[in-house]
Image (cartoon, rainbow, N blue to C red):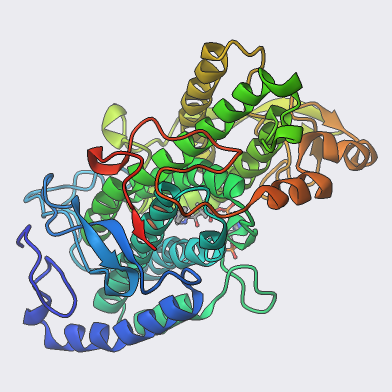
Length: 469
Ligand code: BYC
Ligand code: FE
Ligand code: FE
């Protein structure tokens, strides 16, 4: 195992050339991937030079190499974190046993399902974002969009490598399916809910990278604990790229908030009249994307989650922090709906692990929202952004069949229907935000509804030509 990428058709640090069958299989998939990228990847800009970060090794200083690249020439490849000798399974029924380098037969189906579900989200997000280049608020943002897109493409490669290497013919078929499903398609949609929602404008893009990519962080972190070592090592490297995606989201929303504050203090204070996005509208998009992302953690009470943990395939977030790794006798307090009321019940901890992860995620989201609120306070504006209750606007799990306010109170479905537009973007809000989306392609210039970034990429100035037009 080397940390340096070999300069082959498919860059990799897994000695791909030593396994001719695998190499041939992946080299057969590669043109299909490129066809998919051309058909479903970013619309336009494919022949433009984009200032991108490319991994050239998995060492700390090697995965952040910056240069101009045309997107179809991006070096998508296979990078696993180096193997740790002597690593043992960290949790579940097999805790303490050596990790697996091959798929245990009895776990094959569950493992394949986890890898396929993870892999499916990556091209889905590229599809959702494919039209955004036409309305980029600046070249800086345009470049960030494409950086996220090419890396999500690479995350697909990471899962396809596992499918091809460890799952034989089924794996190759699944890898083809990953290129055949389409976000939002009625007949062959992507697997998970949020990945079929349209990302029609940049406010949704920033909310998506803030909240939905953050689900990615938590799911990848729990798969990084996996007893199936190749999965753990793939996910560890993917996590290094994820931080930038969430940075794009958090700072993107922060800049929209900052701009709204500036406009509130000028020209009579009407943000919309001055071409900005007002704070209540930003809050509605927060409510939407945060709750769509909560659904991605699965049901609150889940035997699938219990099985994945028991079998050592999917751990908790940073399993090391826990003292006890079997979790057999513990329980978890859960608010469930019974007889028209919310009541607290105790459920077996292993079945509550989706909820445990979701709670960690919520705390992480809250830290980001706190930073937005710091911006609001610094601007002297009396408004606070707020995460809605995890019961609000849910489509998966124990709250899905009930209606709740953002504060978490159970209400009738009629009341929900009549008040929905107070809490989530209305058609008019959506039309308004879409109407603002006019491209700005002049270096250093920003659209009316967003403040400039605090600093450029790779210590370059905002005026840098991040995409050569
Ligand atoms: N939509 O036991 P349950 C990322 C299904 S994001 C539709 O409650 P379980 C990225 C479920 O499949 C990270 N269906 O939950 C971000 C099951 O169906 P079947 C992606 C859903 O099984 C931005 C049934 O409901 N990675 O990387 O524990 C850009 C009962 O399920 C949904 C992963 O998700 C939903 N939201 O599933 C780019 C990691 N939720 O089998 C990339 C891999 C549940 O009864 N996946 N269902 O037909 C998993 O670990 C798990 O599959 C889940 C939870 C986290 C999704
Ligand atoms: Fe990803
Ligand atoms: Fe991501």
